Image (cartoon, rainbow, N blue to C red; front, side):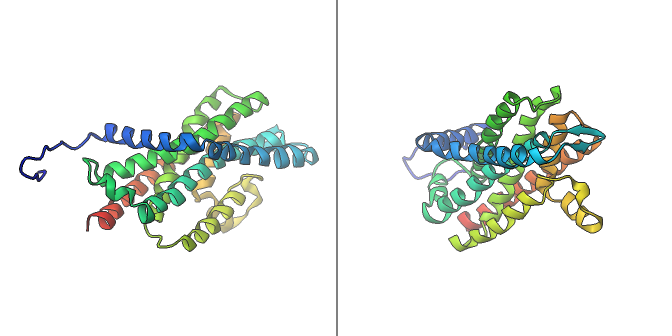
Length: 268
């Protein structure tokens, strides 16, 4: 029950959907003045596609995926699609959330309104998800323009990017709540680079043997990369469902942790 001061007007808590919409709208208005950040986020995977996928691809005749020979660029492109969603979600849910939480004290101000910590968690995660998927949407259009989409299931790659963005945005925001200084972001880079390089982004999982292959297969970015690759190449199977369930569970766990951490940091 809400406590009120004599003569003060009270407002009921906002519904989850309306609260999330308000927070996403606020972030959109802030970033509208910094649209160049979105341009750089889109260009990074494009540079990798043209330099490695197409450039190095001139030295590689073809890759075999599920018994089908495909050009190397078409193998790399879905990986870059997943990486673009990963990078966008990670950047927004770490650096930006840390600044708002530790320096700007924005969340403390929000809690002086009818917003709750659960609203803040949902709103920030949705925005991180949308930022990452916006990079993927632009990259998917580029893949279409270059003729790299081989199946109608490629239209599901955008929802897959949204799912990747949700999973990483939630987990990265949860991890950020334990950070105490900017030096902690060295750990983010230490994690980001291996995931980017060793998630079957540039070469097939069959390059690994034994326990190392198992380790790669249980990493979250690998699940996103292989899901996007299966959708764009039209090789959808039960493994695709495994990736979807993995990313959904990962995102829900991250969301639950964020809510508990924000309660501890802001309400106690």
